[in-house]
Length: 447
Image (cartoon, rainbow, N blue to C red; front, side, top):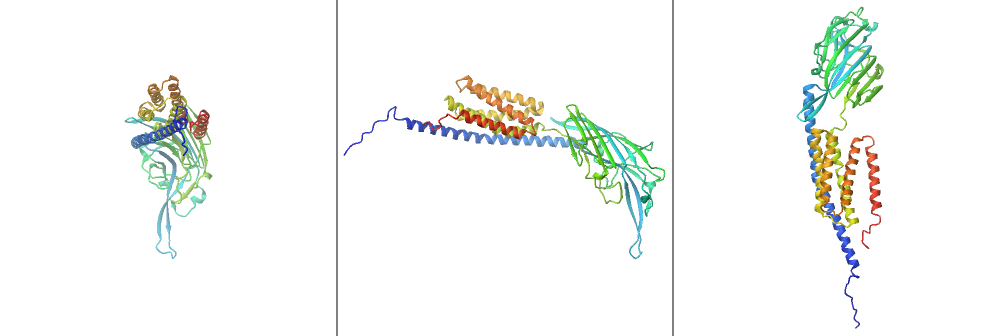
C-alpha cells in the first residue's frame, strides 16, 4: 500500500485555522457586546420610570397650587336676563298653567382689553406658573326689538339681572363694579344659570325698555387664574385684546387671533368674532341654547419643561450607547487594542448615570445648565477611564469626541420641535454612511 505522508503543521500552514479563530473571537465579542447592551436596557427603563414618577409628582404639586390659587378661567358675559311669565292653556282650554322662563339678551358690541401678569409659585422644589390679570370689559346693549316688546306674556323688566359667568370665583381679587349708562352698580356674588354657567356674579338691574336703551356698560375684573384664560363671543361684534410678558402662548378654543406678535419679552394678540361665527342668536327665550362651546383664548404654555426634556433625552439614550459601543468596537478592529466586555459595561453605566444626574440637577438648576454639567462630568469620567485600557491618547480623545458629539446632537434635537425628526433622520443617515466608509476595507473574515 502506498503511504501518504502528512507534513506537520508549521508556521506557514496554520493560516486558515488562525483566521477561523480570529473570526470566531470577533463574533463572540459582538455577542458579548450585544448582551451588555441589552442588560443596560434594564436600568435605562428604570431611570425613565423614575422620570415619569417625578413628573407625576410635579403635576400633583402643580394641581395642588392651582387648586388653592385659582384654576383656568372662562369669562362669559355680561348677559342681560329678564324673567318672562306666560299662561299656557291646554287643548280644551282647561287647567291653564303659569310658565316662568328667562329671556336672554346679549351685547351688541363687546370689547375686552386684558393684561396677563405671570406669577411663579412653588410647592417644595416644583415651580408652578399662574397669573393675575386686569380685564376691562365694555360695550353696548341695543334696544329690544318691537317683536319682543309685543310678545305675549309678561316680561318683568323691573326684575332684570346682569350676569357675568366665571369658571372659578376664587380668582376674583377686588370688588367688581359695573358702570351702566354712567351710573355705578356693585355686583353681588352668586350666579347659577346653566345657560351661562354654573358660577359667576350678578347684578339686579331694574330697567325700563323705553328709556334704558341703548345702554353702555363698562367694568374692570381683577382676576387670578392658572394655565389659561378664555372668553365667550357674546357680542354681535366681539373684540378681544390681550397682552402679557409670557413669551410662550398657546392660542386655543374655537377662534384664533386675527393678529398676534410674540417676542422674547411677551406677546400681544387680537381677536374679532362676529355673531355669525357662533351657534346662538343675540336673544332667545328659555334654555334652547348654551353659550359654552364657542370659547376662545390663550394658554400659558410651558414648552417642553425639564421633565419632558429629561424623558425625551433618556429615550435617545439607546442611540448614544449604540454610537459609543460602535466607536469602541471599531477602535478594537482598526487599532488592534482589545477592550473587555466589562469595560464596555462600565462605560455604558456611566452613560446611564448621565441621565440620573441630569434629572436630579434639572429639578434645581434648570435643564440647560444641568445638561452641560452632567455631560461634562460623564465625558471627563469616560476619558479618564478609557486612558486605563487604551494605550494611545488619540484613541481616548476620539472616543470621547464621539460621545461629546452625541450629547450635542441630542441637545440640539431637544431644542427643535418642527424639524427634530427630519434633522435626526438626516444626521443618522450621515453617521451610518460614515461608518460604512470607515469599515469598507476591513476584512471581517480575515481571509
